[in-house]
Structure formats: C-alpha cells, structure tokens
Length: 415
Image 1 (cartoon, rainbow, N blue to C red):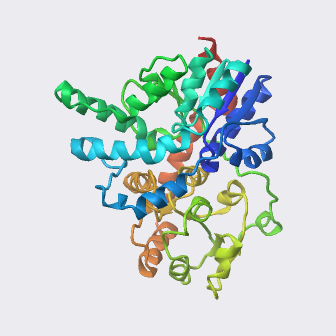
Image 2 (tube, rainbow, N blue to C red; image 1 turned 180 degrees about the vertical axis):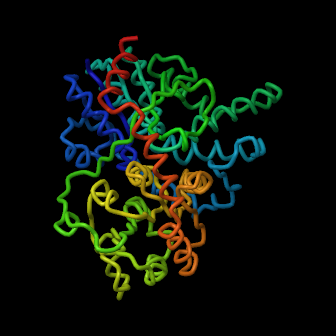
C-alpha cells in the first residue's frame, strides 16, 4: 500500500507523525512525505523519503506586514476559548483573518503541485496535518482515502462545529463561510466537490489521552494512538546515563519560540532565578545563542544546548515547559508532573489549565521569580502531583501503539 504524509513546512507539526510513518514503513508499506522545500532537511533526517511540492510559504512575512498595516486592531480571537461564549461577529472576524492570513498563505504555494504528485504517485491513503487543507483536495483528486493527524488539541474541529451551528441560525442572506468558500473554489479547480470531509478528514488521528481529550463534536471519527516521542538524531550524554544525585527538574521552552519567533515569551533569567533555592538539579535546554544572553546562572543549573527529551524526562522529578503538546506528553508518558509557562500560542494555555484541573501540573501565566519558585517547590514537595501524572501515564500506555495504529490506518484505506 502507498501512503503519503502531507504537511506544510512546520517542523513541530511534522515530527509527531514520524513514529506512525515508520510503523507503516516497517510493516512493509511504501511511505513518502510531501511538504514545501524548507522541510526537506528535517524529513531527510528521519530516513523517510521526501517529495518537495510547490514553494515555501511566507507566513512570517505576511503576519509582520499585517501587523504594520494595523491588523492588530482586529478583535483578538482566542481559539482556546469556549466557542459557545464567542459572539458571532468575533467568530466570523476571527475566521476571516485565519483564512486570509494563515491558511491561504501556507496552502496556496503547494496545492497544485501536491495534486499533481498524488495523481502521479497514486497513494492509497493521504495522512495530513490539520492545517494542510491542500492535502484532502489532492487525496480526493487522486481517489485516495485521507485522514487528519493532529499536532495538538483539536481546536480547529471544535471551532468549525460551533461556526457551522452559529451560521445555521442566521438568515441565509447573512451567512458567510470564508473557509468553505475558499476550499470549494480550490477544490473545484481540481475537479473535486467540497464537503466537510475536506475540513475534518474521513477520520482524525489523536494522540492526546482521555484526560486531555478535547471534545470536537460527534462528527469527528477519532483514531487514538499512543504518544511516542521522536526527538531526531541524538547522542545521550554521559552525565545523563548516571543517576541524578538530587531531584532533577527539566526546563524546556520549545523550539518554535526561537526558530520562528523573536524569543521566549518569558524571562529565562527570572525562571532560573526562581529555581535557584531549590534542592534540585535544573537541566535547562537552551540554544547556545540564548545561553549567551543569560550571563551568570545559579549554581544548581546545568545549561545544555540539546539533549533528547525522551531520554531526559524519565530521570526528572518535574518538568517546566511552554505547554506544547509534544513536550507535555513526553513528560506525562513517564509520569512527570509539569509546570506550564505558556507562550500563549494555540492550545498551550488550554493544556496548562487541563493539567492543573486534573492535578498533574500547575499553570503560571505571569512567571516572575516568586511565582516560579512557589510552583516548582510545590511540584517537588507535594506527592499528589506525581500520583496524578502517573494516572495520565497509565492512560497513555493503554492507547494503541504505532504498530497497532498502522493496521488501523491501512484498514481505513481499504475501507
């Protein structure tokens, strides 16, 4: 069977797919990854075949231009908010902005080339990242089955369900569907009829455990898979192979903040100062350039440029992170309680709130020295956090592993 993984060029959205792609490859299926050229080096490093399609998107340039032109005056649209509490006007304006400034920008440069690739290669199944709406169009144009593969909480499907419900309550003359109109036009150009499967997929792969599962509506067919960390090529350092002499705390603020943005949303120096009085070894994973900006750090801090998180997490008594799904789940898979300092990107604040509500972590939205010290101290001193994280670990372990999930995906393709 031929299976194509399709994503726009966003590393953090792609790497969660890698264990499933390799499970399919190991089972004997022919697997290929299609994305914009900028992702080529990342994909090649996984050992999976790569097919570049279209041109690189310019999302960052578009957002900067929009900000200069005053787009920041548009009412802020918080995707983590309960959609039922968002007024229609704000929902519509937020949808317009996301289609114009986000989804079109990343999909238009690759759509035609991706359709051509699918028609030539003839995959049986296309597995697509949820913002890569060009992929289901290409799959249907080639007669392939297709499923979404979530990179985090399914905020998109939840918002879509609410949007359609709210729009249906309006007089027909007042209805507006920016996403549907755009996709219908692009699909028609390639001989494909629009329906909601082009938005939500024939099924949706979801690696969030039940405790952190977001209800996206009954129309989403969910295919659970166990979270399996993929951190790329790495060497486990000698110090990590020895037992820690004190409780170990990992500080990992993700790669997106430094790869795509202007830096972290929190003061790393303040965070480290807040941890200075802990009887703990703090392992801070920071790029070399970020380390240079710190100056002197507390004596209990070990600065490292990179260490594989799946090897570091099992040695830790607690983790401090930005709340990205991959980082959070890598820790929870080993039952490590979390302190979340969100960048306020996508669902990071939502995941932090969920962890706090079910007792496996804490959320600090204004991470000053005192707030970090108090929260980290609680994670180490109060055993209830570790017990709750252990329950989530057990939920993750009970989910289908990538090998079993690969069989589910091939059954979807045959169906």
